[in-house]
Amino acid sequence: MQSTAGEILDLERYTTEVATAAQSASRVLSTVEGALKNRWLRRAAERIREKTPEIVAANQLDVQAAPGFGLNAAAIDRLTLTPSRLLSVAEALEQIAMLTDPVGEVIEGSIRPNGLRVARVRAPLGVVFFIYESRPNVTVDAAAICVKSGNAVILRGGKEAFHSNQVLHRVLSDALVEVGLPRDCVQLVSTTDRQAVGHFLRMSDKISVTIPRGGKSLIERVAAEARMPVIKHFDGICHVYVDRLADQAMAREIVVNSKCQRPGVCNAAECLLVHAEIAAEFLPAVGRDLVARGVELRCCARSHVLLPGSRLATEEDFHTEFLDLIMAVRVVEDLEQAITHIDSHSSHHTDAIVTNDLQAAERFLAAVDSSAVMVNASTRFNDGGELGLGAEIGISTDKFHARGPCGLRELTTYKYMVRGSGQIRS
Image (cartoon, rainbow, N blue to C red):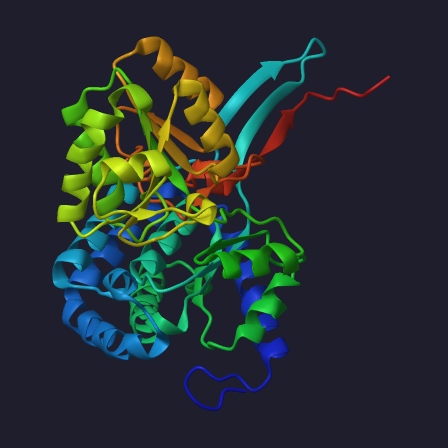
């Protein structure tokens, strides 16, 4: 059935076998004790440390091939695994092991007048089909968070990280067998053929949910073709609004961190809004900070005058997720105009206000409809680890089932457990 690396001769048969195996594994995994899942997480962390030279060597094959796939510097950075990054990956596994297991958690309970004891209890979703691009560390994060929450996972990484993902998957699956869990709890799609994705997206009888994490075209395809629920976000068009009563030194640090700390990720800021009353003072200062870090500023007419060397923005710039050292800038008259701008341009991912005005902060929190709304903090904090979820499998801008970082609880559903003593309905 398989001819050469990454090529499958009978895709329909192969994808069906993978999904069927995942479904069987999920039934086992849904009932195992949390201690066994934690044992796997800790053993996987040990194996990553032991296999670091092998993982780095495989990753270098991907890094060397990256320019041929058209990856820019930010994308190559996301692709690259170093010993220090792998140490962080291993530590993340151990941190997830310390988190409370959501499976079996009683959300609420009651006793009915007829004596029925009713409990609403967290339960795994089942099988997660996870599609992602050139970030091999995500292979480990996704596997960890799925297994910990009682779900089997089918991982479909991008061709750019093919060698890295294969060796990481081998480490994870060998650790599963060592601790007595089914190897098929974590499977890696072994072909880069895009048609395989289409086969999986039609398997609503075997796959419970699909989570795409990557570029807009990938997510649009999944949303259009999937016959099962999808947890997703299309864009990360994130804003920082600097209010008239902002601490300007704080605001400069927040803006620079939001844009520059990792410009190629979905929670990096793409647009700066500044209150007109402080624009003349604040913009030249923050502009110098940003330009010193290589940021290209695309400005409205008013901010363009205050920022020599900037370029005039088009309206399209305010609707763009740059994922690069580029930032759109606009002067707004007041808080309400900032909220209106965000409402019409934001992707409802992450938006922040910097202000010492409590009323302005509360108005912003209430009016901005995004998965995370920040006050006096970088947009970069919309992240599962930073918000206390441990790891995350993605950030959702949907409103049903899960919103914001998707951690352990977001990968569960619930069921009613009803205990009686012979009650019948009259």
